[in-house]
Amino acid sequence: MLDWLIEKRGIAPHIPVIDKSGRKDGTFERADFTYDAENDLYICPGGNELKQYRRAYKTPRSGANKDETIRYRARKSDCDTCALKERCTPKEPQRKITRSIYETSRDIARVLAQTHQYAVSRKLRKKVEMSFAHLKRIHGLGRLRLRGPCGAHDEFLLAATAQNLKKLAKLAPNTNPVRKAA
Image (cartoon, rainbow, N blue to C red; front, side, top):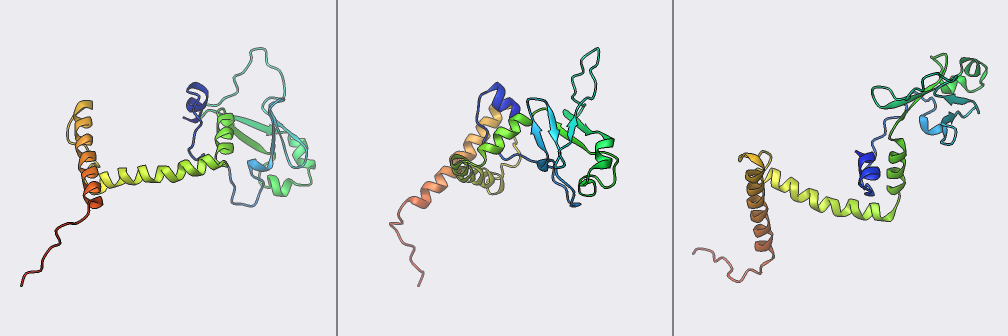
């Protein structure tokens, strides 16, 4: 989705990036490794290279797995002699890192998330999201009852009109105070 927004549509994505590369066992995370885009490899904290392929194939490989990731591996001989092996990969013979084929787009979204404009758009988004949540909860728009795009449009338009009339009624001054019955 991020790749489609950035590459195909040219839109700056103001959405959070879901990143599950963190580790809870105290070993190095993917963020601790440096990616070298020019040579298409990772460099570990110990200074060793993690490459996708160690040899040239006759028929070039695309490199991507079925889950749209690329796997980078270190040499076993490098990991065996590394002083940081216990903090890097204590249970495996060598370190492996996966990288999404859309990681460049994800990096752009991460950089945008640090800007002032991103913070402003997150604040404005809450107003819109609250209106939709109100429509779902209060006005019963969790499910549409009319079929087809025209029916859905009409039903949503009616609910949004009711919501806007409610907001207008709250803004109008109360000219006739309610009297208590004697």
